[in-house]
Structure formats: structure tokens, C-alpha cells
Length: 231
Image (cartoon, rainbow, N blue to C red):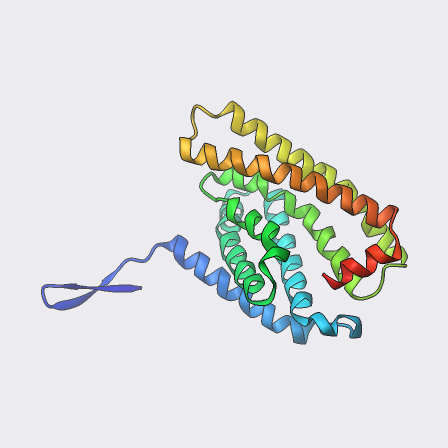
């Protein structure tokens, strides 16, 4: 709670509940990130990239939370809470990548975090359906770092990853683009412009990512696998 001065004395000032939620979720995800080293220690193959192991495990926890919250949208309080907690995670991930990774290696994810806004809760919850696919994307990275590429678990995850990618990522982005176009008259110009620009950039980025996943998981070479593990 902030304080202010009135007639020579300090008086308490109200703090936005939304700001408290963002600060609380940031702190919770930061603590989770630090605690994961003990809860889920990196395998020997990931020792060189310990921070990335923690980052991906934290991202997996976020995807399970936000994807589950988006699917449970009929429960409005849970949906509202989920949408309110997400900015705290995005801020934590933003800080983690800036501190541990070069900008040119992480600009795509940083941009993704910057264009997701909770201003329209229903729209934001639909956007969070993308996180259902992110569960399998993060599992894929974990399996890669653990040197479990040549396993049935990795193969099954690859199939589920591409399937959910089409349903929860490509189709969701298409619906969001359509919604923005149909509601352009009722959305403030600034919000519409940012949303349209975001969709125009995110859609080709996700198509390119789909091509990369298809090539590396079903038409991969050993060089592709080794390069991806080192990123």
C-alpha cells in the first residue's frame, strides 16, 4: 500500500488490485524459477544451460496454468484470475531472458509477450488457448535437452505438438484476426492498430515455426537436432 502526505501527515493511498496481482504473480513465478533447480534438477546433458532448463520448466508450469484456465472459461472468476496472473509471468520471463540470453536469440518471445493484453478478457482468454500447444512445445525442448530425442515419448509428443499447433495456435490466430476485423468499429483505434500489427507479425512467425517443427521432427538431420539443443 502506498502512502501520501496530507496536511502535514502521511496517509495511506490505495494500490490497484491488478498491480498487486501482477507483482504477486511475478514474485511467485520468480520463486518457482529459482526453486526448480532443486525440484527438477537438470540432467547431465543440460548442465551447460542450467538457466534455460529452469526457464523452460517455468514456462511449462505457466502453460499448464493458463491453458487450463482458458479451457475452463465458463468459470468467470477463474478465467479472470488466470488472465490477471499472466502479465506477471510474461514480465518474469522477459526479465529472465534479458538477463541470460542475447537479444537476437529471444526477440520473437519478447515480442509475443509484449502484444498480449488483458484489456479484453474474453479476447485474452482465447489468445491463451495457444498455451495448450505451448505445453507440448516446452515438453519437446525438455526432451531435447535431456537427450531423449530417439524415444517413443519424443515421437508421441511430436505428433501431439503438431496436432495442437494446428488447432490451438494456427486456428486461434485466424479466429483472433477475424474477430479484430469484424469488431474494428467497436475497438479503440490504438488497440485495433496494435492488435492488427501484432497479428500481421505473429501469424507468419507461427507459420515459419510450424515449418521448422515439421522439418526437424519428421525430416530432421542430426545437425538440426544438435543445433537446436545448443540454442
